[in-house]
Image (cartoon, rainbow, N blue to C red; front, side, top):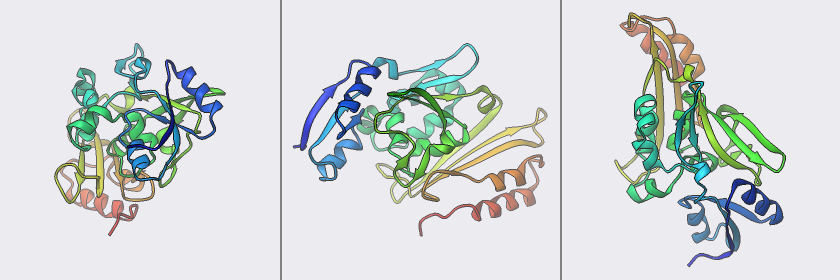
Length: 262
């Protein structure tokens, strides 16, 4: 049994915000794969929950007229992996969230919850950093847009106010057109494992495919928050793809920017 003092099923984002404002002890629940575990373990005993799980306005992936890709914060991992737009434009993100938990977790857990939980081990986080995604939050004072690299403030902490709802993520054409990438997850097991280390890398080559035009390297569990190895990125930009010495410098520089668990 879960020790919950009340449960409110919001019918809209505005209603959810109103319920959070009215109850200073309430917190949001969407898929519940993190929140309910904390409640069961006694960390949030007697909490009030405001559910946004069934809000269709927070679900789905859309390609906007200006080329931006909008991913609803309430979109489940399974839906992201299988979405045709994700498969066409952002397969790396689909691969990353497909490493989370097992099928039941991926069917319930949402990308918004994965990021707003604030954990550096979130498999979507390092990938979203390399995609330079923005989050759109709505609270009592209205909407605001937050770049993901300013969203995390420490282990399990973010800039999201308790009364704010994460509505969606925006990924811009300059971050996916012409780019290719891969996410690698290291853990003690191959499945049902929280990342011991997560690495996301994206590369954009020159038109003739001979030089690295741009590169982005992101890590999870390599510091108190997800991070980008921007010094290492600068080392590789403009180098020939067959320049092994540059690749070695890239790797050595990245090691100076991370602090993974021993």
